[in-house]
Image (cartoon, rainbow, N blue to C red; front, side, top):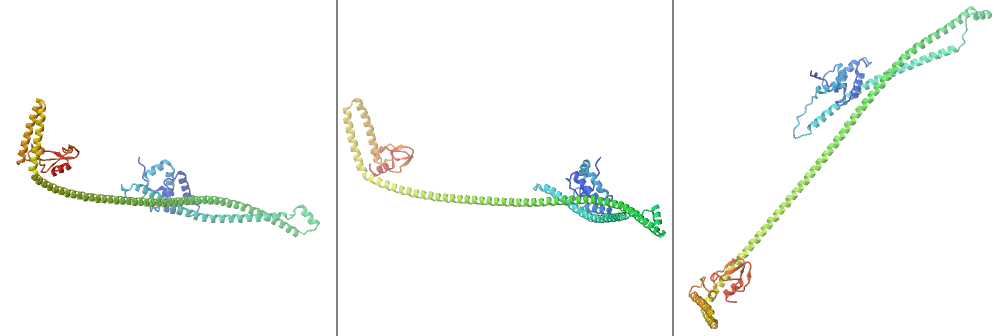
Length: 462
């Protein structure tokens, strides 16, 4: 069977928080019962006070609590099983909060803290209201105590006075009536009137004594009743003072807790402010580092660009100079070739005569040597002579207008034209120097030479 739905906030009725233990609940119930319950409040308007207190405790819900709500709240919260069932079905606070967004993860915790803080403030206000009622009752109880003590002191004074009067009467000599009085009245001749007067005095004293004893007994009983009532009032006053002290202690503890929470909140805000400032300072430093890095990067790029532009200018300048030097060298080579061609054309007849003369002398020497050698040597010499004659014949043909033939002997080549550049290692055929990078080759006789030997050959030197 499902538990019945409860519409009353029992924690607010008793003025305790949700985490209060059984002892705190019992103390709050006794305090409220002693304050407001008609059976335990001797004042004539106890029922009205109880209803007024119930209205004060339920002011947050704007309803009028019935007298049985206090007892129901105590019976429910003091029993662990009923309290668990009540906590499951108790009404939730009517304050509505906005839904927590996924971006703010601490919103539920803050809402819970606010709810607990609101409940604590309501409980503290309830304690303050109860303290005002207790202090008003203490004022009335103090007046009752003052009146009761005054009545007891008055009764004590009356009894003391009566006892003193009785002691004084007991000290006076009492004349004994009887046969002795008759004898003395006869002996001393006392008149009957004097004897009657003396007897009336004794009777009056006895009557006063009896009246005093009756008054002492009555006043003693009344004083006992007043003393008992005073004791009851003093016990109630001490209990009321204890309740007031406990309530003040709770209020002070709650105020201290709230003050501690305020200090903690202030410290938390100061810490958050300091952390915010630290984060801002760190962000500022990070921005400065980023700006410094970007500035250095821009300066580096600018230096690299300037260096690249400078190198490009230098490269273009070197290319321009190389191009001008090559053009100048080309012009010089063309000039030298023209001069060489002109010189060779002028010196060719004389050069041809020298070559023919040298060739004849060589042939004569070979003929003389062949005559001295065996037959085989003569055959080789004859063959060599034939080859030389062929070469000579080719030389004559070159002098007649074919100097660029590939089979022209080197001695008859004018070494004119543009010498091609042969890359790689080679050996100069003139000075026998090993060339590492390149060699120059004559287009006519394919003679390989270095630059200096080429100039010497073309210039007629070396």
